[in-house]
Length: 352
Image (cartoon, rainbow, N blue to C red; front, side):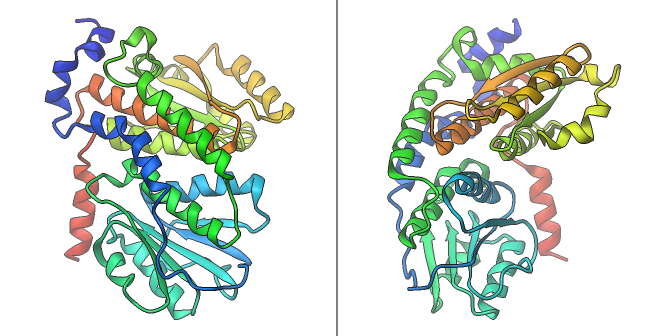
């Protein structure tokens, strides 16, 4: 069977995807719409924070990256995404801290929450359960409790929208209601277009997976889409179990560009995450990059964001990346749901 035939043979998915990850991805637009209505309980009356710190790891931290991308255009208060134990040095007086862990048991996030409480900082936990949900019952801890049962990387809607709603309640708007409506409409349209029942000839995510097959995906974005490029990288790693590279313009023009040489570059497929909101100088850098690298890369594809608002543009590319990594997993015969190596690390840490 040809490679496109593999992706269009829906009964064959069952052997590779026993957990029906495809159903979870298809339901992502509904997840986002439901998540908009999740309220934060126990939100304290606080003065306007000097900085917002979002502590998270892995798929949970991706919600913070998306908040940060949106905040860049709408909010004068800086948003810091913290990946690690404790809290960064900026998280002292007048800081607002979000502890985000879908499982509720992420050691680094629990450490951040404990430090926030020790410093007397306003704390909001966003979780589906675990120790973080138990902490939500403590005084002066606000909470947004979300539905469980998913892998953290597939719960982006449940993690992003409660943070957005909480910030809006504190007069810290990172996206307008119109921005939200547009983004929801965009992902709903994409959910229909990228679903497994849409053949490869008209399915952008399937075509991307077929183009990448046999090479390492290398994803570059711009100032807005650089964080999304990193999300693509981690989705390829967790879903398709393949190494992937990611970076952003203009930074990669000052270092990574030198690595794009034959013969090694022939084993990479370049994915450029483009955005109609790019500044002219970034657009020019992308064109130069294509000219310099196009002849040595194993392949190159441009992926265009959809929509006008920042959220729609960023979220549309995130969703495209989720589906693309899923179809690459199917092509390579890797279960896109399970993460045995990650689970083993957690097991060993727990028993250390």
